[in-house]
Length: 297
DNA sequence: AATGGCTTCAACCGCAACCCT
DNA sequence: TAGGGTTGCGGTTGAAGCCAT
Image (cartoon, rainbow, N blue to C red; front, side, top):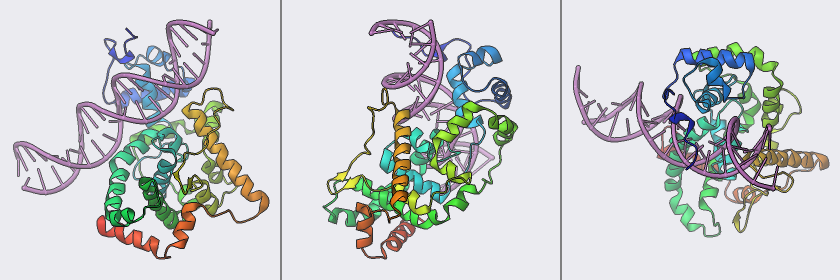
C-alpha cells in the first residue's frame, strides 16, 4: 500500500482559498521565496497541504500572471502550439508569458475545443474531399492558427506590450511582489529561460513576425502526415517534459539563427505551400465559414 | 421569483520525474 | 545505486455564476 495523499490528513483544509490565506501565503513567499513547499504549511500555520499552497501560488498569486480574456493572437498561438505539441500545457504556457498552464488548459477545454469542432463541422465536406492528408485534425488546427496568425501576428509586438485591463484583488496582491520579483535570481532565471517572446518584449534581440510564424512552423508536416518534432532526449538525462520544453525552445533559437546566417528567405513549409497554391481567397473563405457558423468567433 | 440546465475555472488527485541522502 | 521524499504535470471534479424557461 502506498503513501496516503497529503490532502487526506486530518485537519487539512480543502476548497477555495480565502483572501486571508492568500495574504499569509504571499507574505511568507515574499520573505522566503517560492520553493520548499513542504515547510510552507508548518511555517505559516496555513491549514493547507504543501501541494495546495504551491498550486495557489503558481496558478493564481504569482506576480506577472495575466488574467481575463485571451487575445486573438494568444488564441492563435494556443491552437498552433497545441497542434505542434499536443496537450503539453506547461510547454505551451512557456510560449505565452503571463499565462499559466492551468489557464491555457481551461481555455482550450472550454473555448477552443468547441470552436475547433464547429470549424471542423463547417469544413467537413472540404476535408473529406482531401484524401492526401492523413491528419485532418492537425491540418484543421493549422488552418485555424494560420488564419489567426495572418490576422493578428502582424501586430504582435504591440499586442504583447499591451497591458491587460483586468483588475483583481489578486493582481493587487501580485503588485506587492513585483519589486521582489526583480531581485529574485531564481525567478529571473525561470522567466528568462522560458520564452523567446520575452526576449522581444524586453527590447532585446528582436524577432520578426515572419520568424515567429516560421518558428511555429509546419516543417514537421510532410506528405506522409504529421510528425512530432524531433526531440533530442539523448543530450539530456531523462527526457522529462521540462527538458522537452527546453529543447523545443532550443530548436526555435537554432532555426532562427540558421535563417539569419544566410540572409535568405526561409523555405516554405508543406502547409504554407499548400495554402499558397490554393486560391488566395482561402483565408477569407475560412473567416466567412467561421463567421457564419459562430457569431462570437 | 423559482428552478433546472449549462458553462466556467479554481482546486484537487494521481502519477511520473526529479532530487537528495 | 536504491529508495524515500518532493515537485511538476495533465486530467478531472465540483462549486459558483449565468441564462433560459
